[in-house]
Image (cartoon, rainbow, N blue to C red):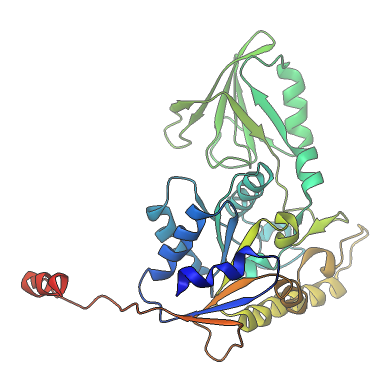
Amino acid sequence: GWIREQDALNGEKTGRIWLEGLAGSALSFLVAARFLQSERHQILVAKDKESAAYLNNDLENILSPNSSLFFPETYRRAYDQPDVDNANVLLRAEALNRIREKRPLCLVTYPEAICEKVVSRTQLEARSHRIAIGDRLDMDFLFDLLVSYDFEREDLVYEPGQFALRGGLMDVFSFAHNQPFRLEFDGDSIADIRFFDPESQLSYSSVNEVVLLPSIEQKTGVEERKTLLEFIGNQAEVWIYDARDAAVRMDKKWLEAQTIYQELNSPVKRASPEELVWSGHAFTAQLLSQAYIQFEAPGEPSDVRCRLQAKSQPVFNKKYNLFQEHLAQ
């Protein structure tokens, strides 16, 4: 039944598929199968952050490396810069960079994270700087560029947004990659590029090209921002736990941003909540304009209902004879 119902996703018309009867990791295997047979991004909106982390862990084990990425929220409170988590900024930037490069991926997120708008493709392209082996690149120019991108100079690089200089070597932790890279200069040319472990500081992998990308999520000034679905365009299929519940959670974050914005007392012009955060009402309207798959949301109307006969694995309590009997059945 599931294979037949996928036709609703392949056409131009909109439609809602409701999956029920899921158990264990059945959803993860369905998402992985759809990812492998289509050339579109799979956006999986879980119930909450914990559920999203479990689903992403499943997909990381089922699919090839780097096929699944976690897309968390940047901050807990809008307009509060110290509240921004650099590690989460890195994960979001890496995902957007992958989408910009038109490499399909499974993106696992949750309502509070998808609620935050992202920079436009144009801005992402403008802020990205590719560095390849053989490029003629003056170290002083790169130093000034990193400073203009708000990178901090440190003795050792250990988190995103840092760089270090040692003779003819420059270490950089770009927001486009989940590991820092080491540039080896030969005069004014890039002789070698290697990723390295920030804990041991030992390099482990040579690559031909890297992307230098600053933090793209911490800006609260006025600039063009898009919803994640607008950024991706029509090259994505959305899986969502419960569209109604997701809208409620997003509205809660949107109203919180509204309250904080009204209390701001700053001479610096700030972006309005509508420019930073996606309301639940706007999310629902955009979601209804395309086909999507909803799973385990009782009572939600749908165009197509598809019930799977999945069952949870029994508890064997280390009784291997019961495990053997179960496999035989």
